[in-house]
Image: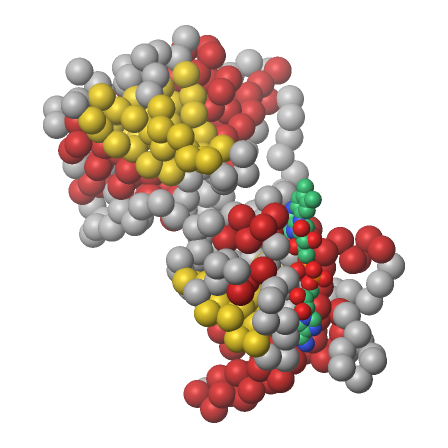
Length: 345
Ligand SMILES: Cc1cc2nc3c(=O)[nH]c(=O)nc-3n(C[C@H](O)[C@H](O)[C@H](O)COP(=O)(O)OP(=O)(O)OC[C@H]3O[C@@H](n4cnc5c(N)ncnc54)[C@H](O)[C@@H]3O)c2cc1C
């Protein structure tokens, strides 16, 4: 019989982020599908009581807490020690955890210490004839595999966006403290802080309804023989401001900054979508001035509804990559779209 630990960590403010609540849904669904599995919740953080209270009515058998000032910071040595202690305390055979940088960094090492296995980027958990099979993608989201493993504990790191986050009214949880042995060496690395763009320049919004992709065409010579990069910047930023869409870019566009050409100043390699970029999960996507070549569109694998604006009726989007292709000038289209959005304000 399997037993499940849902392994979560708090954020710097003590709360649980969306990926953690999604992992909780995944753990509970897995327990229901297995029929007879119990779920424990294991929490790592500086102080985990508030987070435990938020998910108190989730039906967990036990809430185990590895808490302390050293565990509030993301750091391999302390996170791995805490995860190991929680898994040992629960005796779980299956550990469900969210795909965050903190978890992904330690999953393999912790599995090794416990003589188990770990898989990351899991997109589905299915139970067939009482046995668990996981789904995950390989070769930059081109091939999906289902696989199972006999080794236990099996650490299952679940990608965000695959299930709905757990929801429920908060309550009062009884947290059983789990002590974590931390040597001096485990505290040696220090977490100094997070560097991120100011809020109004933050263009990557994983939870946005819409992914807006800008391609290199925005910076190319237009019908009048000139480039119009400042106009492109204005149109794109206004659209993002009004819609709160997430901004993606093609490789050609994000690479241009390294080639000394006129660039969209807010576009970085972090925005790149595609085979060598990101594969985000948004319900809808709109590509503009982007050709829609396979290495780019492979990053749209999980975008449900795809539309594109391109002057070229034979571009890649026209060949089965988009649901709708508007053959039009993106400068004109986005100006009109922004004007329509302005009317709604
Ligand atoms: C190993 C490998 C990995 C790669 N990984 C990635 C990846 O991760 N992501 C990625 O994006 N690419 C990747 N590429 C590159 C990819 O093959 C393409 O070269 C790239 O996606 C092209 O970018 P683009 O469509 O923006 O630019 P272009 O090919 O230059 O296309 C610009 C488009 O803009 C249109 N256009 C211009 N002006 C307008 C206008 N006013 N209105 C409407 N349309 C207009 C043009 O018709 C054209 O279709 C990879 C390539 C290789 C070999």
